[in-house]
Image (cartoon, rainbow, N blue to C red; front, side, top):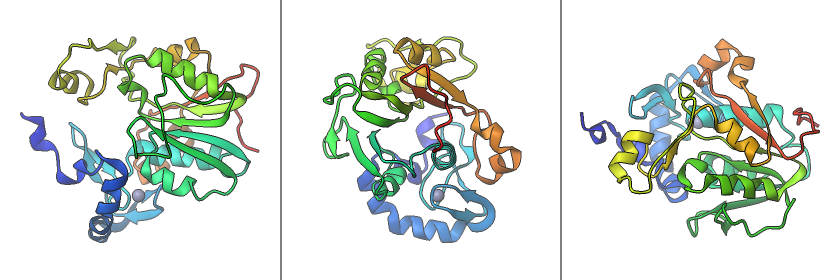
Length: 266
Ligand SMILES: [Zn+2]
């Protein structure tokens, strides 16, 4: 079956971030009314719905929130940031790479943060940045958020080393990627692959690899100390259902210093 047939118009809204969200706002208000209910709760927009929208090649049920377009990973990460980190309580200098719109509009309002967004695409963030060559000094940021970015970057080793370099010794980073837990070793795509081949192999036309269980090793090779926090399991089955999370999605919490503990709460 031609996969493009499966793509629903609302899924295209996820492709181009800031502009699309602005255009989509009235559309989302209508969609929210249609889906209102009490079965599911979105942790990002803090609204209740009878169901979420399906998404992806397999049309996963209850994936996209009709109120804010959050996916499972966004709802998990926002909960994690709120409940398990010092992001909302301490004075921190934050680098947010390729910022998720639903997080950016909230984080920019936090007066405790010195908050910098960065993107390789001009105009998408406060600064243009190639994370394989970051224009900031060593040990500059307390926090780095860089999610679903590394799978787009041919030289991801270099990007991880750069993120490690600019993180403060007592800082922390969350570096999520699409990861196939069934895959022991990451599959690197040849630079000669066509867009169609990338889509077929890696699920997206501009992904250059599929990460496997060795992703953690790659982060450690770049210098990070890594804890994979299986937060959905800690939240429990009722929360996984209510927030429509992916049960085995781990949070890759990375620190620069091997001597810190991973309890980030103040
Ligand atoms: Zn939402």
